[in-house]
Length: 367
Image (cartoon, rainbow, N blue to C red; front, side):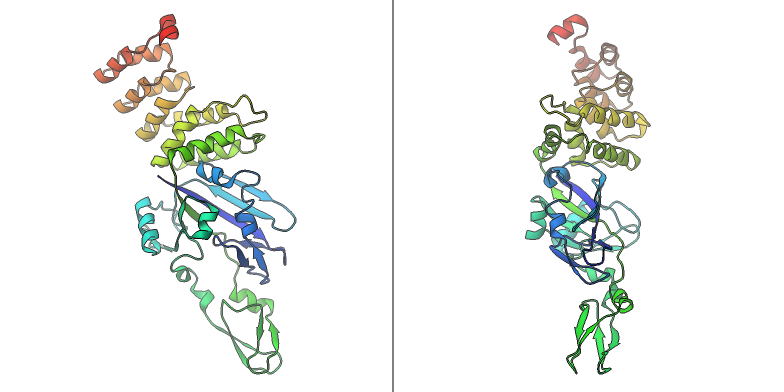
């Protein structure tokens, strides 16, 4: 199943201390300001998510920012598990369209605004970044990336400081350029260099992953067994908030919701993440405008939630969609009054299944 991991990242250049926008998954890049080589790999491959396991972090549905201040390799990261969207108009791009573009090696064209985004099929460098990556959208090494930045390829003429001969400059010119006539080394002044290498905005990179259910389940289990000091709990809550502001439905998301709501705290790990607080945050958001949420999301929550609040149980038991009520009746952690309500449901399928649920002391002993 396909999952998107989107991020924007800036690395502080060790040469001029300016923020360099990372435009692709590469080992090294050139600072747009001073021309110094920046070790991008040290951040992307080794410490992008702090002390968290990069693969496990990306396999889950989280959103947040991480910032390392000071020293060589300081960086700012903004991460999201929301779907791949057009960088110009924020239109969500269909998964089928993305997979086709990756397979054909062609740029993705937004159906809403016709903006083109380059596509890079997973190679050894990208698979080292994540072993289940199948491609990256908006990577600077992707197909037809040049179409995004035509000005960079335009040619300038600069006179040699020694003999006055004209030197042709392009976006690929290094900060120092040798004159073909007198062999003098010319160091390009700031105004020329910045024209060739204008400061880039921090564009999103969308990494598409092909995951299994065990990959997603394992990500949740990972956060429950490490001593995370609750630092990353807010990244779960950030995504939940982001999701309910702009909801979507796909298979990987529903698998994540299923295992998130089934999860229990690890009592053997001190200072670990409190999963019950995260689940409560999800339920609180689900209750708001519950009638407008996708039936598939409500079905998943209804069937697999182990600690659904009583008022939300009643809302799900009254849902107009029969499949939501059928999913709820499969849950063995329902309140007595909810079970009775389902037993009296207008749907014969729901009431018959609910009749098998036991209530009272008998239900607690044998249900």
